Image 1 (cartoon, helix red, strand yellow):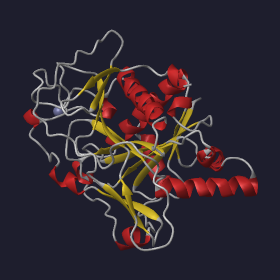
Image 2: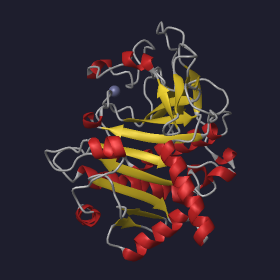
Image 3: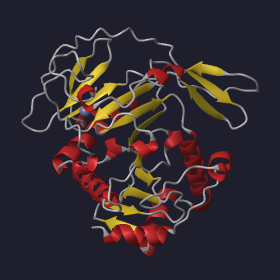
Length: 364
Ligand SMILES: [Zn+2]
C-alpha cells in the first residue's frame, strides 16, 4: 500500500540530517550543498523518564533550551537559502519541504519503549524522530492562505512521512501537528508544522484506544464512527459536511474553539485515504482554517493535531481524524490552563459548543 505514495526529492544537511522536497507539478527541486559548519549531532541528547504515579513517559530534552528563538525575518532558518550558508533549506526555492529537527526531543533508532514494572526510577533512550514541515517558502504566509493544490501537497507530504515513519522500527505513533501563533509559544513565525515519531503510545491516544476497545466489546461497532454518526444526526454542532468529510465542534469540547474533522469513511491514517479523499481533506481543512481566521480581527492561534493509528491489532479501533483547538476565548482574552485543567485534567469551558458551531457556520 505504501508504494502508492509520491516519492520526494531527497538531500542531506551538513550534519547528516534528512531533507525532503515535495514539489508541485512542473516544479523541480534544486537543492544546493549545505555549507554551514554545523556541530555533529549528539545521538543521546534526550531521555525518556517514566512517571510511575500516572503510567506516562516524560521526554526530558534539556538541550532544546538553546534552540532558535524568534529570529528576525532576514535570518529565518526556514526561508530558502540559495547560498547554502543561511538556512535549514539550502535551495533557491521550494514548495513544501520536510527535514529532521536540529533540536529534536526524539532522535535515533531503537526499540519501542516498554512500560517498566515496579516503582522507583526508570528511564529509556528517547529514540524516535522529530521533523519540521515547511508549508511554503513564503515567510509571511499561513496554511489557511495556501492555494488548494498547495495545501494538497502538504497533505501528500504528511502522508508520505506517515507511511515512512510508521514503517520505521521503534516508532509506535506518528503525530503530524501544527502550533500556530505566538500566543501558544511558536518560536518561528514562518508557516510550518512538525511531525513526531514517538517510541511509545501517547497517553491521550492510549486512553482513546482503550475507550474504543471497551465500546466495541460492549456495543459492537466503532466508537468514533458512532460518535460521528451521532453528531451528523444531531446537526447542532456540525460546521461543514461534504460527501467525504465532516467537521464539527464535539459535544464535550474542552477548548474555547475546537473542531474535529473526520473522513466519512473509516480509515486509520492518511495512507489509507484515496486520491479523492486526500483532495477533500485539503479542501475541508482549508475551509475550517479560513473560518478560524475570520472569527477575530487577527489570525486565530491554534493547535492542529492529526490523530493517526497504525494498522496493528493494538490500534485497530483508531479512526483517523484531525482535532483543531484554540486558546482564544474572546478578541482580547486567552484561556490558560489553570488548576482544574493542569492539575486535575478537568476542563472548564466558558462557551457552549453549540454557540461556537453556530458562529463558525456563519463565517463561511
Ligand atoms: Zn521564513
